[in-house]
Length: 199
Image 1 (cartoon, helix red, strand yellow):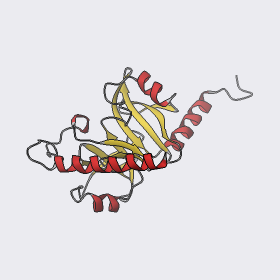
Image 2 (image 1 turned 90 degrees about the horizontal axis):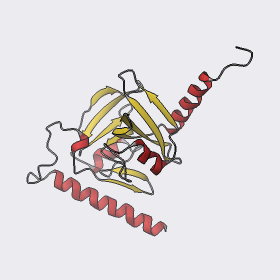
Image 3 (image 1 turned 180 degrees about the vertical axis):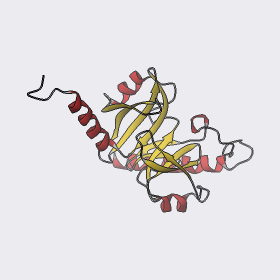
Image 4 (image 1 turned 30 degrees about the horizontal axis):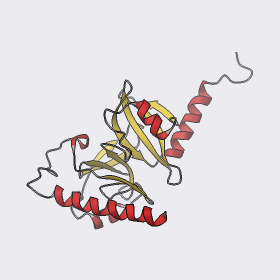
C-alpha cells in the first residue's frame, strides 16, 4: 500500500511538472499574468499523497525557500492581505492558485479551485459534508463572508475552509488551523451556554 501511495505521489509530481511546462508555453494561453482569478485557471493540479495535499507541487507547511528552489518562477514578492479571521499574511499568486505565507517563511494556506475530491466553486455544502463529514466550525467575517470548516488531515493540523453563499461553495482554502478552528468552535458554543447560577 505504501508503494502505491508513493507511486501516486510521484505521479502527482510528474503531473505538476507537466502543468508548469504548459503554463509557461505561449501556445496554451495559460500562465498569463492578467490577474485572472485562481478559480478560473484550468492548469491547477491538486493531488493528495503521503505528505498531504499538493497544489502545483506545493504543500501547506512548506518553506518559501524550498518553494522557490523548486519553482524558479514563483513570485519574489507578494501582496500583504488580511484573512477573514484577521490574520495578516502575504499572498503569492502562482500557477492559478493563491499561496499565503505567515511571516515570510512558511506556506500556511493555499487557495485553489477544488479539493482533490472535486469539491469546489459551485459544489454544495451537502456535497462537502458527504465527502468530509460534519463541519467542525462555521463562522462569519466582518466583510459578510460565511465559512464552513472541515477536517482535511488530522495529523498535519489541516482544515478545509469553504467560503459559501447560500448553500453553495464560492472559494476553497487548505489551512493549517484545524486545532485553532476546533478551539474557536468550542469557545463559541461555550459562550452560548447559560452559566450555572444565572437565569
